[in-house]
Length: 238
Image 1 (tube, rainbow, N blue to C red):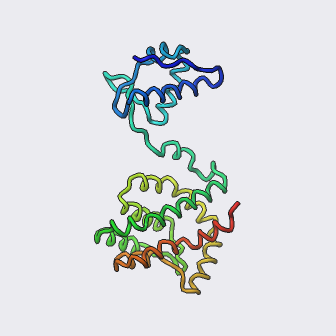
Image 2 (cartoon, rainbow, N blue to C red; image 1 turned 30 degrees about the horizontal axis):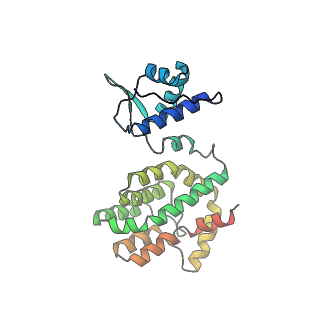
């Protein structure tokens, strides 16, 4: 094994060992499936206590970067991208500012997905969206049940074919639903005004534009469906 530079300081020793390990993996061109040195070899090379190296490795295991395999010892693996995010996306942990920022991110992401959804949607996809509509199309002010709203938007994310986008939607949905319920009265009042002005967009409108292959109308509707949330975010800016 190549010697790892021993330039560790006394402060946050485990953090520094973790950084040294990551630097070593990168410098050696190691990737998912490659074996890494044993705990003893790493300890000797770094010149620190076994417990420190073990703790650093444990951290990398927790984020999914290292795993043990029979007859091979420790190997690198491709870590789940949102593993850390999954652990903190809970309304009782996050403050309201953080949740509103996540809502803004979700709105921007979904609007940005319009091109991919429009280009990728098949007749079968559109039929699935229509089936979801028939199971519950919400009230006249487009306030849908949690189950219907989740299933409809989940299908839109699936149409993109991007596994990271799909996984992200599942992770942040509890935050979106929490805010949707908290600001239910606000959203309904705003949507009433948009309905009077003929500017309210429903899930059914989105599917109709997609089915008619009306690109401009679909793109505009993807933006306008979030008008109440956009207004909410603007009124709650720092």
